[in-house]
Amino acid sequence: MSKHVGLSLLIISILLVTLAAQCGAPATPETIIETVVVEKEVEKEVVVEVEVTAVPEEAGMVKVFGAYATPIEEPWDGVIHLALQKAADEGKIEYTYTENIGYAGDMERVLREVAEQQQPDLVMGDGFGNEEAVRRVAVDYPEIAFAFGSGLGPAEPNFSVFDNWIHEPAYLCGMLAGGLTESNTIGVVGGYPVPEVNRIANAFVDGVKEVNPDAKVLVTFINSWFDPAAAKEAALAQIDSGADVLFAERFGVIEAAAENELWAFGNMSDQNELAPDYVVSSAVWNMDPTVNYLVNQVQTGAYTSQDLKDFSMVGKGGADIAPFHNTESKLPADLIEMVNTREQEIIDGLYRVNIDEAQPEAVN
Image (spheres, rainbow, N blue to C red):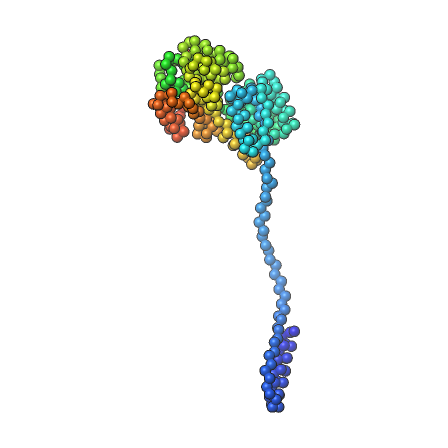
């Protein structure tokens, strides 16, 4: 009903009421209910801006392959393997590996087969002795991240390098050795006289000299990365020369020390279990920070080639001195205090262990 029609009806109703009153009829109240509908067309253009955020697909688990020239029993490769196995056990990665590949040319073949058949996201291992081979493969598979132990630099776009930078805990082990020797002769058995081994041996010697300037340190290289029998033989020769404390840069030395009931120090990992009564401590390399960083970089698409050195040092948790275990009660309390103090100074950045990569003398 329109507004005009409604008003007309209202007027007519009033007139009828008035006439009735004039005729003497009783006035009856009348309620008139009127609904007025107002129709109006409204046109309005509204622009609505909607921000759409793309939700990325859930990232898949990173596939990692470990390529090891030696058996994983050898501490250097063993440390990498343990870190990757830990990440796999925690559900962070899918992990497969091949060990004892050697140095006769099989590394390149293995890596190419893995790259084609398994198509991993990340390949890790030791490049020493296979340096050219692993770099050739990395060039041909730029979509795969490669991170290898190496004494050389990274290469764009996908080849990163790392190394054990455990000269700091090696220095602390040297301090302990200098305080424990009774003959003032200490032995070190290393692999090859290359920079990454030399800096560990030299740091150990420096630690010995800080506590005991008069001590003599014998250094022997077996020219092998893994030859336990040769390492043991070299250690026995040092014992025959008067050494009563040994630093096992290579695997096999601790056995010689234990057989002669002498103090020993391990390398790369906590090797106390090899001779619990004689292994005082070890210079420990912890690859967890490096592995976690690489996995995160690959998973987020942020990976780029780089030198990962810092992740293997004390400052980022990549290096440490192992606990004394059940040998602690046999060690001089003042010596332990001295070593703990120096360790804290290294952690706090108040003391810097010298990095000397020159080949040490046979007698220091």
